[in-house]
Structure formats: C-alpha cells, structure tokens
Image 1 (cartoon, one colour):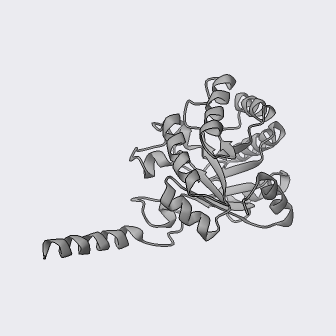
Image 2 (cartoon, one colour; image 1 turned 90 degrees about the horizontal axis):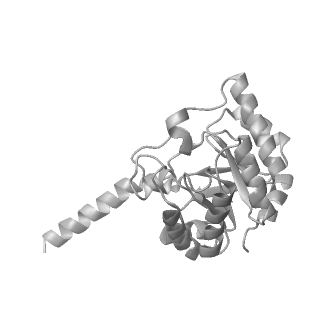
Length: 254
C-alpha cells in the first residue's frame, strides 16, 4: 500500500521509525521499493553520486526532473520526495512555485524538499504550502551552502544550537510536513524531535529522530568517499569490479 504524508504524521505519534533512502534511477528505486523503504528521496546528492560533480551546486532542475521521472517509474509504495536544486527557489517565492510546480506536473513526486530556515525561506515555504505543495524542511548542514559552512557538524555551540532550534520551529509554523536534520549533535536532534509535531528524518544526527535517511550509494558501498556516520552495508564496488574483471577475462580467453 502506498505510503502517504498523513501516514508519516501518524507514525510519529505511534513512534514507528521511518526508513528512507535516496535513489537516482529506475533500477535502484525498484529495489528500494521492493525492500520496503518508506520514503525515497531524489536528492540533489545525485549531482555527486550519479553525475560526478564535486558538490551538489551544478545540478539543474531539468536534471532533478529527469532522474525523478526514472525513480518514479520504479516505485509503487514508497513516498517519493524530490529536492529543489540550488538557485531554483532562493531567488523569489514565485520562482520557487514555478520550480516546485514543474516537479509536480512532470513527475510522480508527492512532496518537495528545500534547504534553510531563515525568514525569507520560511515565507517561501508558507506560500508553497498555501497553494497545496507539500514541503519537507532541511536544517543543520545544508549542502547547498557548502562554500559558506563547509561539511562540518552544525549546532555545536549554544548559539548555533539555538538557531537551528528556532529555525525548526519556524518551519513547522510555516507548514512543513517533515523536517530533515543533517549532521547536528544527537542531543539537539532529539530535543527538536520531542518539541515539534512533524516527523524528523536524521542523517548524521543520531538515533533520536523519528526516521533515518542515507545516500544509497553510501549504504551499498558504491561511493569513493562517504561521511563517517554512514554505515556501509555492502561493498558493491568490489563486487561489481570483480564481476566485470571476470567477464573481461572470459571474453579475452575465448
């Protein structure tokens, strides 16, 4: 049965953990869905794991839509959420609406995710929600701000923690249906999870969140580098390399 946003809200009350992963193509999306993943995110991390960029900034809205279309064709039950890429929503609320509108019109997405909790972004989210676009918030380490904040843990000072807490509350008031907490101290993530009524999805934020998400390429051992908080459940780099080597050997020995 397809997972809905309403179910995520219910699961928070029931304290049922939410299992989420990323996908960039049909084949992986189909496997994630078959395995029972609750939420599949077409994240702008595809810029790095699928397109080979050094960070998430170069990926375009067209890129996101094309990959989301492929992922959507592989999903029957998981809730599909799609990232808005860098500069597709920050310039103005109107542009954010157009970008989100394209995703909803051209893919099977049931919600979009965007980064940041500063006042201008809160107002943008409020307007998106008002016109019927479900929004997942994202605070803590926001990769689209890599040149300003780097990839280090956020919210480690009392002031930093208070700012993330303030942003989280503001995003809830704006109408988000869930909040992604990235690379923040576990104590802070647990505090936010207990304070806000919407589900929290953690990535590098400890076990106190309502759910967890990782980049699937990290989980499967397909990444050249992965963050220290990402557990590698398989080593498909080695498996695939060995298989292809054996194939090449077989062909050349004929």
